Length: 179
Image 1 (cartoon, rainbow, N blue to C red):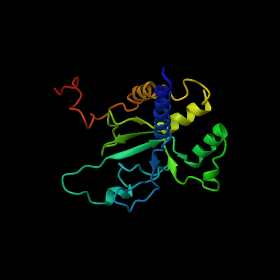
Image 2 (cartoon, rainbow, N blue to C red):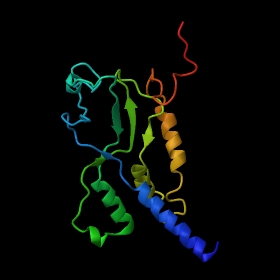
Image 3 (cartoon, rainbow, N blue to C red):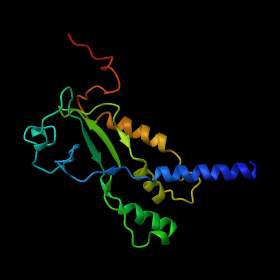
Image 4 (cartoon, rainbow, N blue to C red):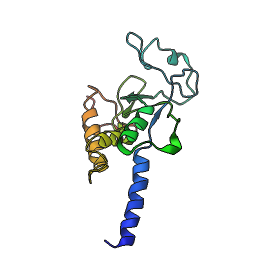
């Protein structure tokens, strides 16, 4: 590969890494916002279950409720710790600590509490953090393989719901028939 091509490839790799490490933020619990966020707690109803405060809010006409379930929520400050351990401290970020939370994955639930097929998503930041821990940035395959990991994640989560709802992006399951 020519020197100019190697330099272009390094630039593309850099920006790809920047994109992979961008955390998928999880909003703080707030039931009063336009898009309410609630924290799940043992013994309390889930947002799609009777008795949850979010169900007391009226829905706009011709809409249905959808809920995002975040998996593996972690403080974004953890990303800075992992990156500092791998690359050393960034002097321009001294004293700055990322605020808020991010998630490793997410999927959507319908108004009846059923998972919506095709909505599962593996977060790039959590995946890239894991790859930074092992195999680490010295490996030639450090940030390779997200597509495969994402496919495995989606395939695994498809079996979580015994009666998953059809995907919001596709017609009802073709194998389903009503008698």
